[in-house]
Length: 203
Image (cartoon, rainbow, N blue to C red; front, side):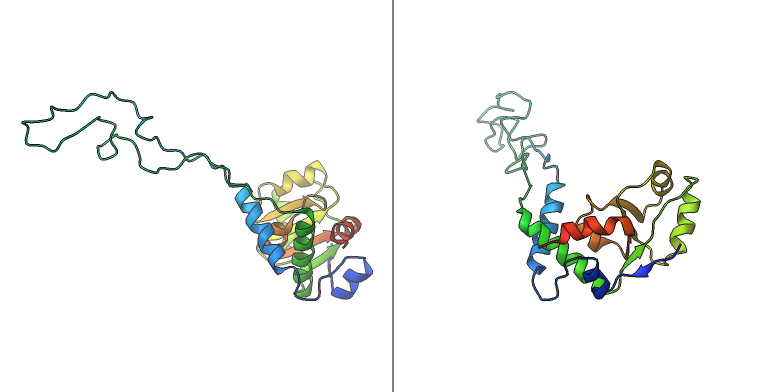
């Protein structure tokens, strides 16, 4: 199994739209920020003084004890009391329009092609479904630590072989995104996925 570096000329020949000017940097930033924000659950929550369990009874009488005046036990200044301005459940999600997402994907892929980190494979599969075989196949292609392999689809055995490799990922050309393109050291695209990549980068 051998791979060829995808150059700018060969990318254009495969009808992949390449960004050669400075456009798209802000789009990449916006897309990455949105993807990471959308993964946040926003479930952090602290109880205010009105939500903490406890009575409204004063802990001790108002006068005669020598202590400062004290109200309910749920006061924020007391142990076990409510939290002042604590976090409440919130929605962190950000929306990025389709045009910006497409430009971000096109820009990120273009930059990786320029640096020679994108290669084309005829196909990729691991017949026996073993992680050892998967690692052997990967090391035969590159010595990079983090590897992304893009195809139209992969068989069950190949997915089984890849799932225990923490630094390698199989993704279909339809689902791969800007963050994936930027995260991995080397990107391998199977020949049958080139048409989908071309469609996704079309202006």
